[in-house]
Structures are given as structure tokens and as C-alpha cells.
Image 1: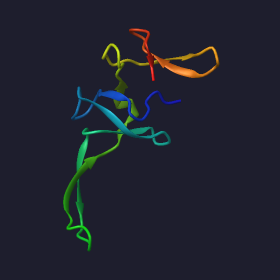
Image 2 (image 1 turned 90 degrees about the vertical axis):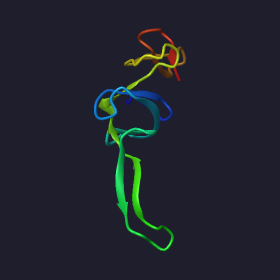
Image 3 (image 1 turned 180 degrees about the vertical axis):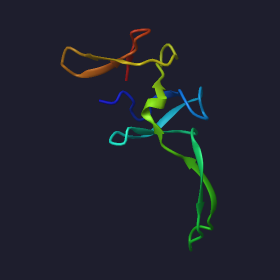
Length: 103
């Protein structure tokens, strides 16, 4: 089970954007990669088509999930969440530092 989900706030641990934070746009669980908003931009050269003039485009590239860490919304620190179970059996993520549930 991955501890990073869509719309989570994450901190980048390695690479050219180390130390920056951003929101997860997409998660690829089978490849263990995530796309973070405004992080890890790469240039793509596109050919012109009838609808698109072409040129050099910048877009976010996937990052390895091991290079990002979840940021707790309450204490604003990067944490490795603890998995806990509610009384009805539903699994939740809990911050190890402040004990707050991460939804």
C-alpha cells in the first residue's frame, strides 16, 4: 500500500528540486512514481500539427515515490505516516510527530 495519494502535499527529498514542496497531481502505483505540480519540469520538442504550432513545451515529469515525503497538514513537517485502523476496520494514515489523522 502506497502512503502517497492524489492531492497530498509532499516535500522533495532528492534531485534538482530538493527541498521544494508541491501537490501530487497523479500517482502511478504500478511504476511507483508520482507527478508533483510545478516540480521536475522537462522540455518536450513537439512537431507542428494542424491544430498545434509545435515548439518546445515544458511539463512535469514523473518522480520516483522514494524521492518524496508526505507533509503533515497540521504540523507542516515531512513525515513517514503510520498506518492505523479505526474501530470499523478502515485504514487511516496518522502523523508520527503530532498524532493527527492525515486524510
